[in-house]
Length: 409
Ligand code: UDP
Image (cartoon, rainbow, N blue to C red; front, side, top):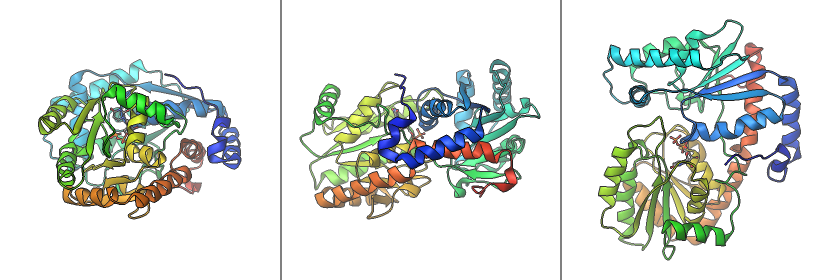
């Protein structure tokens, strides 16, 4: 469903001053034509942000649009392998894979209307489209993954394309690589007004949970994420089984696939096998656009888990905190940027650690409430969409004067 919120609708949450700042910056950026390119319209954090960022930039007078690259299954298999290897996995890649990658990038560069002043290319999938840049344009590569330990040969190959950009943007300083172009940090954000994050009545939560077959007679532990081994769903099941020996509770593992992730079905099969025969584990396959369902499940949770082994940012952590939930997350990537031990949740390094913290939190209701309150305020201050809009406007301005930016790292 397309949502048509205006900036003034955010005033109650972020305050008038934040909105005035956006109006000021929007005027400065003016009618610049900004094009965002990524590789999936639905599923995953990048699509999630772009759905909201574009209309808000438009409202501020910036001519922003969003194009999605197209590719065959082979292409997405190659880029998924790239994605894993850039986050540290082994990979032996062939010339065929590189050809598939380049040809698809080339085809998309011809298909997509690249007429814009500033082009932001998200992640490695469309990165090689920069070969088709016009010299009067500014091209920015927006990396959403942890590039701190990339497969050296692959990074050598892709890095050559990245160096053709005018600048790069990362979620965190420690995700970056040495590059000879300016680097910026912009953390992701969530939109508090969308179906996924808006307030919900108890009755609505109940109705949706009933429809999904989720019983709420015991505390619920929830992890929502794509079915991806990096999210460690099997580790979550093991941790849950340890907790379950002491506290009667249920686990919800809910998620779906993304068009650019062909491994999901295989991982889902493994999860179903691990959960088989246990009536307290719900494995729910969510179709694209299940925003209300995700909202209700997160709100029904006693504790939210995001036990990722590697993570770009972990929007699901932000979403859960916004709903006032304590979050137990893997101490990796952007999760470590969001969770502070004893303040809004706990970072864990192992499944035993996850089980320990789950028990700790579940047996302390007052602590759960305090962690949840702190998490919500932390997100309000740092990770709402209005802050992303501001950073993108600042970036557009910085691209005119790269040397003068204050957010260069
Ligand atoms: N998500 C979704 N459907 C699913 C699984 C996840 O809409 O079946 C959403 C989730 O609520 C979050 C985003 O996709 O907004 C996932 O972002 P995150 O940064 O947690 O992980 P990524 O998928 O980008 O690795």
